Length: 106
Image (cartoon, helix red, strand yellow):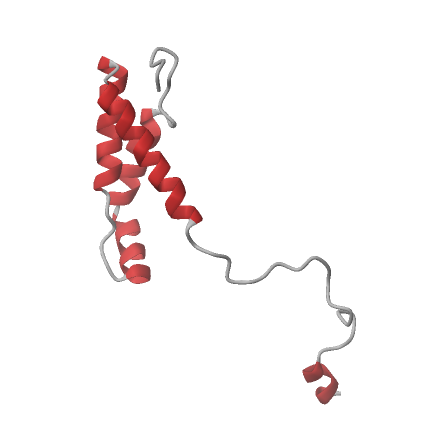
């Protein structure tokens, strides 16, 4: 962030606008409410859009810092969930045998 002259936002401003518009759409609202039981929080997308536009117009250091922190938080939020299943290195030894239920049916 020291050289702001060559810095670009992590996403184009149009991407932030599209995410904000999608977040506010009726379909997304219904889906999010059904899955999570609450309305989606779209305010961060609006702040990111405003920061991106401020960066493009004024090259504001505050807008640059805000966008970097927001993207960093977004990446950390996706990485905090552990895998549900443990990944295998190879298939089970008896993978080719019929399932027990299939043996009963025959």
